[in-house]
Structures are given as structure tokens and as C-alpha cells.
Image 1 (cartoon, rainbow, N blue to C red):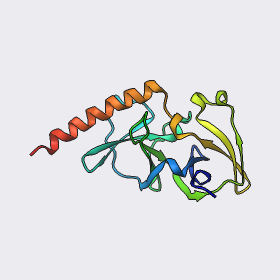
Image 2 (image 1 turned 180 degrees about the horizontal axis):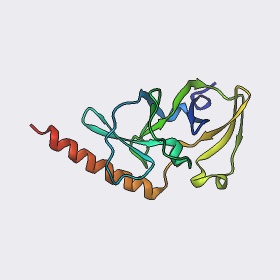
Image 3 (image 1 turned 45 degrees about the horizontal axis):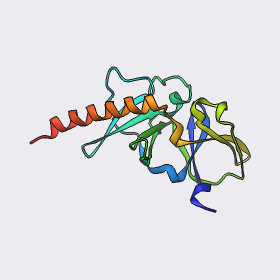
Image 4 (image 1 turned 90 degrees about the horizontal axis):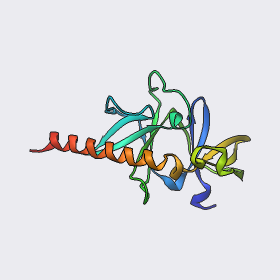
Length: 164
């Protein structure tokens, strides 16, 4: 078994999804988020990580679900590792169900079966079919660019308040 075989199983939209463990930097408990009033539905807000803003996206909304009225006490933030195309982002999920699960089977999904090919495979986990997500395809290029602009603006705001 390799790291590429291990997934993190999360609950979203009253269902489950799996993210490759190799794409995840850490799993955090739900914390206070600052949300700009003009933010898109999918942006839950920004988490202040020692003066560095981490944009936190609602994974369920990114995948077509509704914005929940409130976040559950047991919600988690799954922080993705940065990539060439994207700085680190957090994904707000209803709950992390298992941080190290290995599917018993995986069937590749056709890229045209989901927006931007975000569903990379159908995984069999504990006898259930679970969509395996491609963390690099969660956002469209335009969304990534807009998120970078908003993150820069939030970093400038945080810097103003921390200047001594």
C-alpha cells in the first residue's frame, strides 16, 4: 500500500466523499472564520493562521449542495497542501469520518461526468460506493484567480491590524 492508495473519508451533503491523503496537509477542528460580505456562496470565510489567511471553502457547496444554515460543532477543516496552481486552501466538511482509509476497489470516472472532472473515481469503501475527488480540480481557473485576489486582500487587512 502506498500513500496514493490512502484517502480521507468525509461527510458532505448527507453523503460521503474521499480525498487523497497525499493532498492533505492537516485536519483542523472548526474555528472562527471571517467572511467578507461579498464572498461567493462556497467561501465559508478565512481562517487566521498566525497572521496568514487561509481561505476555507464549503466542499458541499462546491459540489452543488446548499449552504447550511449553521455549521455543526463537529465540522472539520481539511487543509489541502498548496500546488503549483493554487495556494493552500481549507475545505469545510460536515465531519471527517476516517483519516486513513484504503478503498477495496476503484473505478476511474470519465472527466465529463462531473464539473471540471472533480470526481476522479468511484471508490468502494466498506462495501459502499464513494466518489473519489481530485483536489486539484475543485476550482475552475477563474475561481482560483478570484480566490487569490480575495486572499491577498484579507492578508493586507490582517497586516494593517498587526502593524506595530
